Length: 123
Image (cartoon, helix red, strand yellow):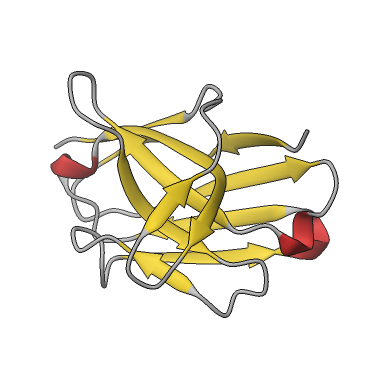
């Protein structure tokens, strides 16, 4: 029964930056891998990034490599997604979830996605 809440979305101009936060409550936080996903209406949900419980493994989708950085602060029960050099195609609702995190892919465990946080990149 780990509960995850996303925040930090907003409106930003192309080339700008934004930091998303995923804050957890529950048990076993330090051992959980967490991933970020995004979705645009009418399109499939896309795995963006993930980080293992120890932070030893990370994954980034090709579309965000070199621009996004995932990190975690277990003391504050949080995972962050620093998004730099934002592009209009990054516009989506962003969700975090418990995942299996591998260097080449991210797989969500749960179908309960919560509310997410809206990111809009527009000039």
